[in-house]
Image (cartoon, rainbow, N blue to C red; front, side):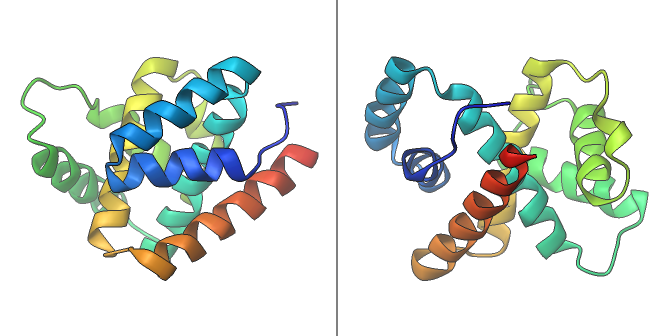
Length: 149
């Protein structure tokens, strides 16, 4: 079980998603001190699931995941291949329909893909202000429930 997921993790995720590097660095330093990066990782993974279910509320086809990952990589200008498309597609399938798709993924590649996909979802949905706060609150609640299991 991961340590408790709390408001400081949601604040760090908000800072990351809004590009507030100064706030993210400050909060990140605090997370380093209390060793709660695993809780932050759980919140990120949960936020990805919440965002993906919002984006594909009626299910998806593999082609939908491939197109979304392609758009994400193009928007990032990912010419160097920092976001592994296979990993990103498997993460989407894992949170939308088949949790087994996440088994055996390289942790570093999965972390990069998660961050890129989250940014893409937030940008595509134009989540700002109260909408972003509601998304983060839903993600935090789900992460806390997951952490209790």
